[in-house]
Amino acid sequence: MTRPITVDGKPFSMVSLTVRRGSRLAGRTVGEIEGELDVSVVLLRRDSSSDPHPAASIVVAERDNVAVLGEPEQIGQVVGASQK
Image 1: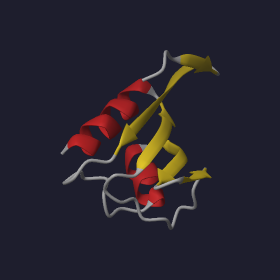
Image 2 (image 1 turned 45 degrees about the horizontal axis):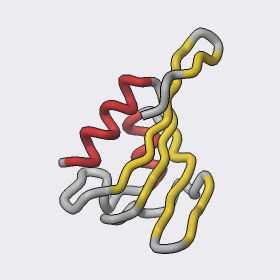
Image 3 (image 1 turned 180 degrees about the vertical axis):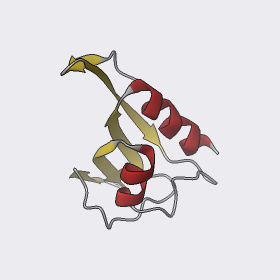
Image 4 (image 1 turned 135 degrees about the vertical axis):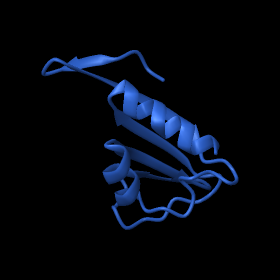
């Protein structure tokens, strides 16, 4: 996780993670992740291709790498969801 930056008085951090097997993120769309966890998926890397700010309809799969921007509390929820 990056050190927080402050925008309009709110702290934001970014994390890059690999979606693990059995993760609660796998099989969900980018839009579902963003809406339910109140974050922005700013990059999705699958195999050798990268998609900066992927469309909301893209389904996240196991072994995808995602970069997520949000407030530290929400980033913590994303990290927890990626491991379960």
